[in-house]
Length: 106
Image (tube, rainbow, N blue to C red; front, side):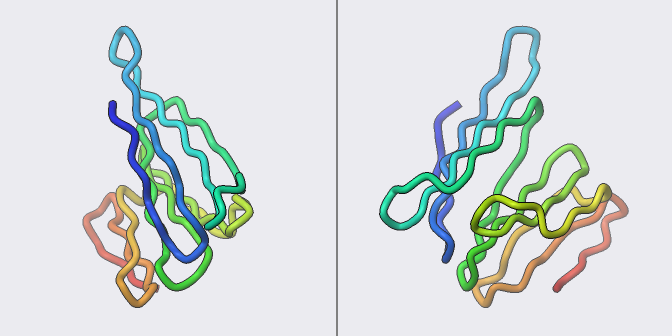
């Protein structure tokens, strides 16, 4: 698939979703700061989406009913196994949608 870029207060994440032969999905992520200096990278053997906080240097990853909140260095600061989607509001509030359909805000 076509690469995408997600911007936030902590920099940007370059994301590439690919589909391998047989339909297996893969996601590659590379985070950079405002000068283009590499911050962290993550590779997944599934489809994963990223949201960037517009107010703080943190990123939310969601995919395969798993959620992880990363700091600017790529360290996991929070995680859950029942989240299907995560995003940030313009004010920096984290919004998650759970497998049950419930919406949480923090």
